[in-house]
Length: 178
Figure 1 (cartoon, rainbow, N blue to C red):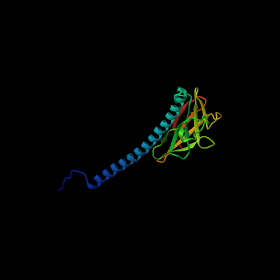
Figure 2 (figure 1 turned 135 degrees about the vertical axis):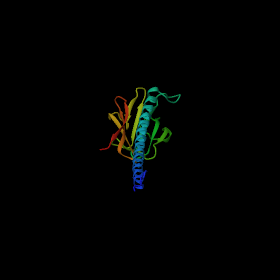
Figure 3 (figure 1 turned 30 degrees about the vertical axis):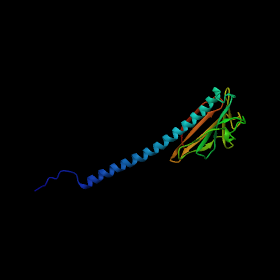
Figure 4 (figure 1 turned 30 degrees about the horizontal axis):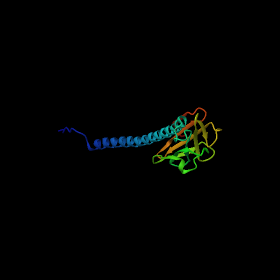
């Protein structure tokens, strides 16, 4: 006599549960990596926006009541997790006095300025009104400035912000690390 057994065996249930756990784990790990990549992209866009803002302030002549021709600039140091936006009140084309600081921007945890494209450190980008003329480390000789950002949790990509001194164009992009 045969007994008809309907339902699933214990081995079948365990197999299905293990498959679901594996799929869930892979999804969560990929989600976190994507989240960190997106954070790096957003920070790069924020830095590019701040560069454009300083450029616009110099073009518009936004300044003190007595002096509408103030140079605006940004200050980056490789290896740091912050950068500064400043008014170059003494017109020496570099950030050198605490009273020039407009604000210091701290990058999110894990994001750092990994390198700047100049031969000397730090990188000073200055916009001199009214055109504005763009100075990279006090000179108009360099054609561009490049700032590279890295995220501790993203090993396959880096964010690159590029400022073209001739055209004034600022762009940011994620680049795959070879």
